[in-house]
Length: 226
Ligand SMILES: [Cu+2]
Image (cartoon, rainbow, N blue to C red; front, top):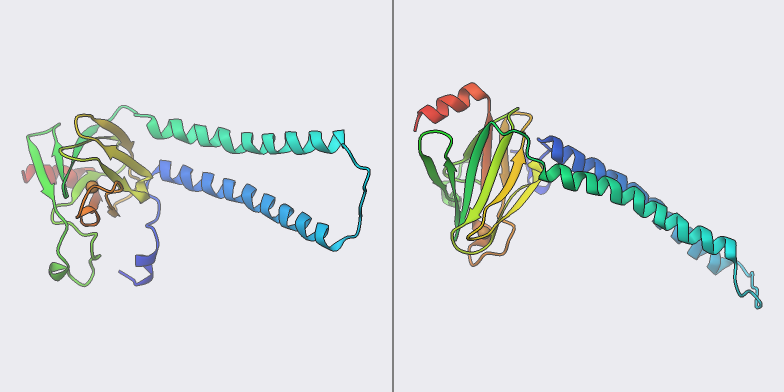
């Protein structure tokens, strides 16, 4: 892996993350326009010498500077709500995987098939090969097929953890005694990384998530190994 790749997030691999990136860019554009206008007005106020000691009200400008921000908020709020509902949407899933957070590792269950269960521990730095990421590599990766609707169920056996993979645009809390749901559709093969995102104890930083996406045939072959 190149050095620079270690300093940035991985590229998006799901339609949901694509939506989130578009929404970020849209919102950022609005914010930048507002910031530039405000700075221009502050600057022009400082350098001009206009004054009006008897000004008490200006109905028209007050109307404009009330309505305009409200409109801008609507242009941010509606796309935001749309994504919020899209993220919660579960299409008919072909596959369900259960992920359980433990202090301090993840375990996975593929309960649709034979009883497939395994633990996923971080690889110690000394065991890494030169192409692998420190503190992100695990001994048993979650293997998932791409172009498939997958339902993920999350829970925990002890404290609250949070299963997060930035390139999928997914972050779901794992609470003990409760099951949360997430839904993904990975659109290409690859290896994707994530970390627990809920401060869960001493080794919180050492329970990474490593996900390998492969095609359906390879996935079925992988299932046969168990
Ligand atoms: Cu955790």
